[in-house]
Length: 255
Image (tube, rainbow, N blue to C red):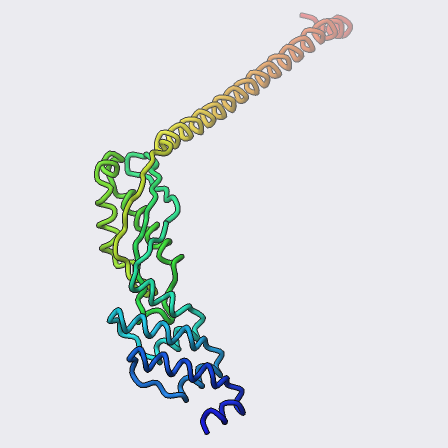
């Protein structure tokens, strides 16, 4: 009767029957046909869920049918998640650039080994969050190093510090290890900044010198204008002397 009513509900009886047989043969805890139908009608991948439950059971991982269906309906590949939880895989973090306290730029490439945390898979952050957090931790560690020699001599210190920060909190993964694959020396940021500062200071000094020169030229021009004005006044005064003498002779007031 159940198989008959499945057809009315547009559920393929063959799929439910095969899934039930596989689950029973694998020794999985009892899963009812009603649960399987519900997941199928919710557009879930029933076969993927059953395979994931079998892999988890063989690997002694705690994963219930409800958890597996929730992961599947959340849009994640539950079978792949279980496989990654059994067999960890590596996340390659892109080149991270940091600057040590002595002003030397260092470029680091890290590899992060993770495995899926099934309990946090629904709602947990993905790979990009792991990459961002690891990159932030590497930049912080490089930035607190007194010299780039310290980083080059002991790159494992970065791994230890970053790993101890609990970067996998709130993510769908558990970080097993962080390995610094390569560190290259970049440009001397400190020297570049000093050169830029010196260039800026030189430009400011030139501007101030030019300002003083312009003020001196303006002052000189003003002084020359005053001298010319004084000369003109003197010449005008000299030209008025004969006129004054002539007037005095005419009026008889010349003494």
